[in-house]
Amino acid sequence: MKIVVVIPTYNERDNIQILINALLQKFLLFPTYNFNILVVDGNSKDGTAEVVKELQLESKILFLLEEKSKSGLGSAYLKGFDFAMKELNADYVVEMDADLQHSPDDFVKLIAEVKNDFDLIIGSRYVKGGSVPEEWAFYRKLISYFGSMFARILLRIPKIKDFTSGFKVTKVKGVLDQVDFSKIKSKGFAYKMDFVIIFSDMKVRFKEVPIAFGLRDRGTSKMEKTNFKESLNLVINYFKERNKNFLKFVIVGFGGLFTDLLIFNISNIFVRSATASLISGSVAMLFTFSMNNFWSFRDREKIIIRMLIPTFLFYVMSSYVPILLRSYLIHELEVVYGEGFLISNLGMLIGICFGIIWNFTVYSKIIWKKKNA
Image (cartoon, rainbow, N blue to C red):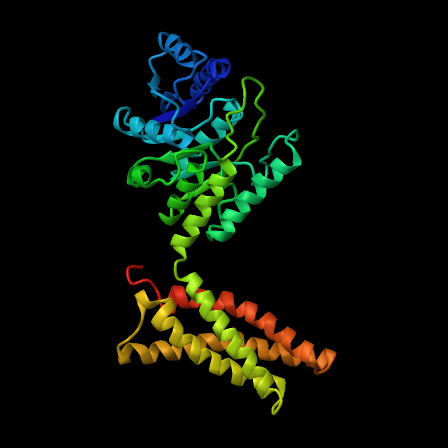
């Protein structure tokens, strides 16, 4: 089995020899694997490439790919992956930074999982046993942790805890070789998130291995000021693509909410609040079904009567779940706190919030399921 460690460099003369020598020692722990190291240098001005060339005289498993100019972290990795697959016949590729913040000891932990046939092995700072440097400023810890959480929630990929890890092992056959590199949106730091999103959509088998992310103690940080903005834009753009029906659903939902609350408060003059909730919910449900079918999910609309009727019946049954729940909630609140405008509308709003999540999930995944899904 061939494992290629891809290491992008830019002005890493002080670190690259230390890292390569450390990796060569770690390779000895896995005698059944064939290892290569591929350094992708971004036209370093400090002689990093020359150091690698000197080391190549002593090691036949060390390769150097030189860029004419620095093209960005993501671009360097893509070139490295392509070379590893086409020229070195890699079965697995490892992403590893040259600045020694990725520990060779943790490299051993990641490679130990290869035998378990995972498609993706992630060196994670945010699973049990993982860590970031205590010396990091509070704001950096905050951005790193909650940045990953924000991406996971917005893109609905909750299982992967470290969304921006740059320390990974990826299987080539059936995984990396299925990725169209020309469609990778980011050529910089955010490429990490790009790949996680793509691999999640591919439903790869993955495992997160805890790592201790270290401090850079030699050289200068290559972290660019635009990384946060680039990552945020990437997540938002993916969210728009993956949820192109959601904004329309929200607009329809507000229309349904206005209808619901208006009829609820009018009906509440004549009947009890729980009953008014059923009446207003039913009217709002008819409104939202029509709007969702012919606008929000127009690309998946049901027009033929024999499709429309069963679709509507299922819509009614599923939509009544949050309606019945909120009616029950309103009743219970009024029993405890007494009847009143604030109490009844509080129960309504809580039920509506649950209904938004429930309805969009059922509508997009079942009722108006993508035709090619």
